[in-house]
Amino acid sequence: MKNNNGNTKLILLHPYIQKQGGSNRLWLLAFVSFFTLAFLLTLIYTRESTSTSATSTAAAATIASPGLGGLPTTVINTLLYYASTSNNTFHMSHAELKQISDVLRKCSSPCNFLVFGLTPETLLWKALNHNGRTVFIDENRYYAAYMEEKHPEIDAYDVQYTTKLRELHELVASTKKQIRNECRPVQNLLFSECKLGLNDLPNHVYEVDWDVILVDGPRGEWPDAPGRMSPIFTAGVLARSKKTGVNAKTHVFVHDFYGEVERVCGDEFLCRENLVEASDTLGHYVLERMDANSFQFCRSNTSSKASSSS
Image (cartoon, rainbow, N blue to C red; front, side, top):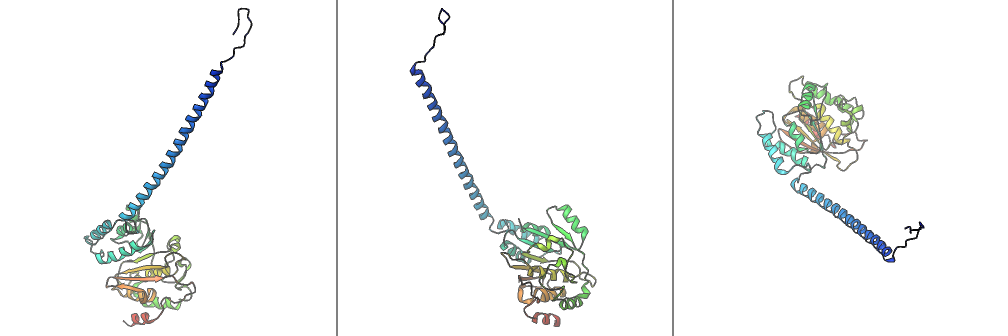
């Protein structure tokens, strides 16, 4: 402040004003600290609430979906009912569907399910193995492409069978002669030259440890039809060649079990000692993983003798 003479004078603030400024800073610091603490407490509570909510949701899902496949029991039963009462002549019965469905439900999640044959039950198998891996193999490349185009969720591949049904006994005899070489029970079929082994499937099919395998194809019972010799032999090798894992067992189902091919090849490559349930229409085998140096499909040859004499 200047006086009338133009000289500058020093203005001193009152001590009370200085104290007032310091007090404001203290109040501001307290205010910021309070809101910081409130923010941290809110963040912690929100995280705990989210975690609790997620746990409750998971528990509710588990209660609603007792099957490991993830579908509620009522949904599974409904699917089985409508599938077994369809107008298609070639569909499976309710008893057959339920037998396979029960195994899929008990399967470790996710379940790996390999199916030979595109059938009226194709969409059912995909639905029942909810959240699992389901792969279909069919001899008709056009039908496989059609199914994938119409149902993009379906994973289907075609295979060229080189066998003929009338060559059944000749092929079985040839395979048994090569049991220590190309046709051994534990191997990677991708590199095999065994006549009954399927070696032209996508590479990843041989890398998967399949928990359930269903042989319901190829179609046809005339002499020049492919027959199911190769799928049954391939299923037996894939089951015994599983890598070290949680589940060392593989469930193999063979449909149309009344056929000679299904009975003979089932006895030779899946083995009667592994047959846990059978009817005229469905055979159910449970195979265990085998050592890489094993050169025998069955523990005894009594089943082979029985099948050849029948």
